[in-house]
Image 1 (cartoon, rainbow, N blue to C red):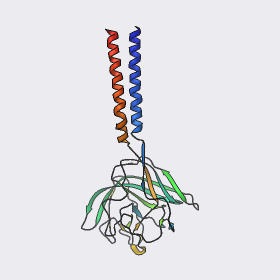
Image 2: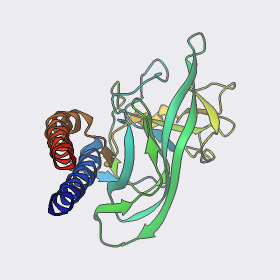
Image 3: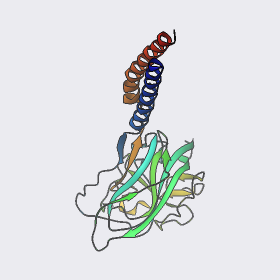
Image 4: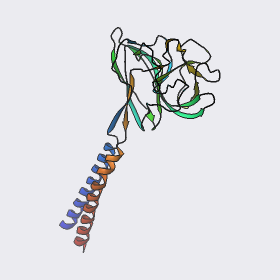
Amino acid sequence: MKSALMSNRSRLLTAAAFITAAAFIATAAQAGTEYIGNSLTLNGFEGEDQVAPLVILGEYNPAGPLATSSVTLPTGTVEDVTFFGGYWDFTLYALSLVGSNPTLNEQTFQVVASESFSGSIAPQYGIQTLAVSGFSVTAGDLLAFAGIGPYYPQSANNAPNSDATYMDANTPNQFSATPPGGPGTQFTVGPNPDPNSDYDYVNDFFDNQGRTYAIGVDVSVPDSGSTLFLAAPIMAVLATMKRRCFSRTQVSLG
């Protein structure tokens, strides 16, 4: 009777160890966070937009929009968006490439995730961090926003792989863009002018179709490498414990 009780106790302890290890591994799998975006440090005279454009981070090229970006997201979940500003009214987007038209220098993107934000602490300005929910992304997705809030240098830029700034194609020289719709929405961007696209680069009168906005996101990413590294020895030890427990049970029953 005593041997049977000891065997049951061993089995319970082994089961508890397996459950604890599984919980640890599951927690470790979501342990990493990456900041994706531009620097939040201001240099020189900077300010926010007075009208609301569509901005795709790191996607600008003087010859025409790029199919990819210098600012791409990893697979994971966006936890928050951080930017420098004091008044904001914008929608954050993750975009995936649908297709390219090299002849017209056009790119077609699809909205993967979106969330809108509005608020103010004006006349004070500084770094703002806003929580994001339900914003899952895949490696290679592009980061974008439509609206006003994040600051950018009020000077000439247009550097390759800076932030591409777009306006509605049917309202030339207005500098504003109607925000794209939610997940699943597709739209085409092109150079200025491009009557076939949904959005063109803004007018380059100020030499800043390409800008650098002070905005970025924190992405929670699976820590798969360290998880597998830790999981293998843990599960091996637990398997040995289980075999020994089973052997003791066989002996006591015999």
